[in-house]
Length: 301
Image 1: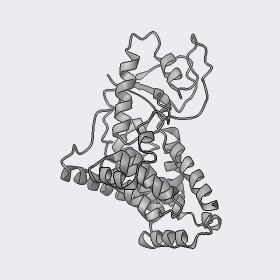
Image 2: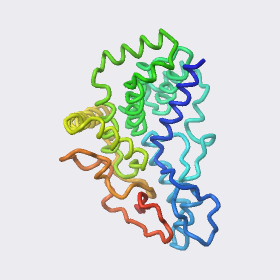
Image 3: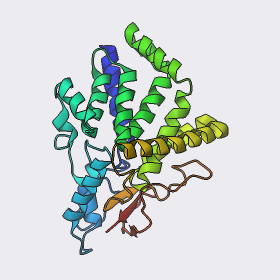
């Protein structure tokens, strides 16, 4: 029971950590005639875009499609998508056999649902969870890349072992650590890979903060090794997608997104390649009243 509670809390933290919508300030009660001090919700977004002559609904619809294609299938607060209305909700409670069949056919949502189930089951299996997320990443899910990073970071933390009383789970966790003695380095590598694949649209404050902290813990040499591993992972994932007859990676950005100002702190690699998602043609929108220095609003028409 304690293990189940711990895993539930952990997964909740992980989901928040990779949420593409920054969560600094709550502005649900912003008056209609005042621009929001931070952009976290659809209401905030609509206020920031008011009187610009834009088809906001069309831009939001295009953006939702982009994030879903990158594996962000749960709540998208910035665009008004609740957890109950998300694509991932449709897979909750689905039979394992059905999910496995769909995942084998290339269904990202099914693979990610299987990964979540592997951690929430009474016989939680970290190896299985990582395997399913790795499959989803091979299908192009940036979200799955972030999840692998976060789970590796959690599994590497031996202080959490004190909360586990299940010897079977402990043995599986020990196997994972034995198979990957560089699990902490790989945690950083997968986070960098996610940003290299998704670019600014997936560079939330929380994602960047996690990368900066992991890089500080890894030190200069460890970070350099993680950067090298990230470059290899990106090439491996591209090769996998090509072998499946899919587009290597989508280069077009979402129509609207909020991100940190630059990728400099998100990619702690000296000579990193440019992100796959090209935002060079996107326009930075000035938002009067926006006081969050870590947020930029971009329009990519």
